[in-house]
Length: 201
Image (cartoon, rainbow, N blue to C red; front, side, top):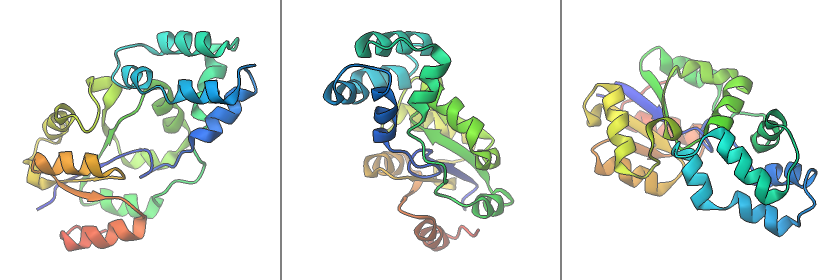
């Protein structure tokens, strides 16, 4: 029986578009689009930040250096956070209903700037009071370490956990740990697949 539901953040609860952040950064740098895009697509840099290996201050310094930015940190946070779209992908009523029956927890690859940005702008996140965030636990999905952290946080057996994520490799990794998992496509699809597992909203 499911007791805990873990939600991914990006592309499950909130939507984002990297092109929006690139467009905003293009306003404050003289570099060409290709170079700005290359920095935002630098997986090594992003992963270091999203696993907490470098601080927000260090990430800001490195990106500002590479993009020749001269904007204060708070402005940079706003520009970097502007990739998030205003309308959540899940409805308030859906999360509110689930919260009455299950513990709801976030399991997300994210960073301090992005999480502070969404937490301040999406009241819907108030229904999910607990979290396992990559930059706080030092590892990212699909690394099995983050799923161990999730099971430890849930304090239930893996098979009593349901996890939803938009990426198939993250779903596969969760299932390999014994966690029940559903690949997210839409709220309606998630509800249907949850019902098949006996999870009612």
